[in-house]
Amino acid sequence: MAGPDRTFSTPMELMRWIGWAQRKAGEDWVRARELSFEQAFVLGYLRENPGAMQRDIAKISRTSAASVSSLLQGLERRGLVERRTEPGDANAYTRRRSASSSPPGSTPQWPPPTTSSSPR
Image (cartoon, rainbow, N blue to C red; front, top):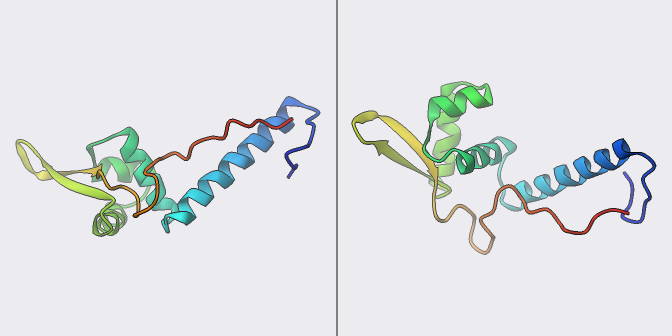
C-alpha cells in the first residue's frame, strides 16, 4: 500500500487506501483488546443496538444461536457485556455493553476513531 506521502492518481485509488487504513485501524483496535473479530463485531452491534437479543445477533452475524451464546458468555465473563431480563418476559435476555466495556487502561470506544490527517 501507499505511504503517507503518496499522491493518488484516481479517486478509486484514494478510496482503496482509505479502506485499507480503516481496516488496519480496526484490526489494531481488536488486537489491543485481545478480542476475536467475532467478539468485536458483537460489541459494535451492541453499541448500535443496545438491548439486542441473542437471536438478533445470531441472525445478523449469520451464525448459530449456540455460537452466539458461547461468544456472549465469554464477553460477559470479561465484563464487556451484561445480561438483563426483559420486563414481562422471563425467558428473553438482552445483551448490553456494560459501563466497563474495555479492559483497564483502554478507552471504551467502538468503532475506532479516525485520524484527522488525510493522505496527500
